[in-house]
Image 1 (cartoon, one colour):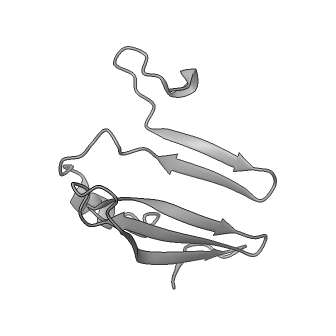
Image 2 (cartoon, rainbow, N blue to C red; image 1 turned 30 degrees about the horizontal axis):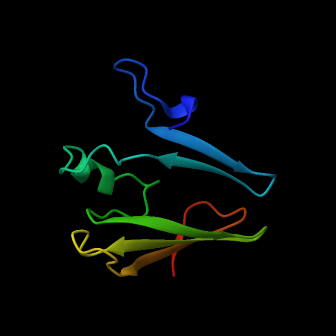
Amino acid sequence: MSNGIRPNGPHLPLHRRLRFGNLIDLHVLDTRQYRSKQACNAGARDNPHLTYHSNKRGYIACTATPKTMQADFRVIDKVTIRGGAARTAATRVVQAGTPGSLVS
C-alpha cells in the first residue's frame, strides 16, 4: 500500500483523484472496506452524480477519448469460485461538454 493511501490512525482516505494528462481527471470512491449493506444505499440512488449502483463486487473498465468516456461496470456473480467469470452489468457514456452520462 502506498504511503498516500495508508491509514493514519482513525483517518482512512476513501477517495483518490487520478489524472491522465489533459484527457481526464477521474475521482474514485474506494468502497472496498465496506462489504456489508451500507446505511446510505437509499440516498445514493437519489444522487444525480451517481449513475450506477450495485451490491455486486467487480470493477470498472474505462475507455477515454477526447470526445467521450465509456465506463463498463463489470461484476462477478460468484466471488467464492476461483476464476469466476465477469460480465458487463451496465455501460455509461459521458460526452465531452455534456453534463451527466448516457445509458449505452
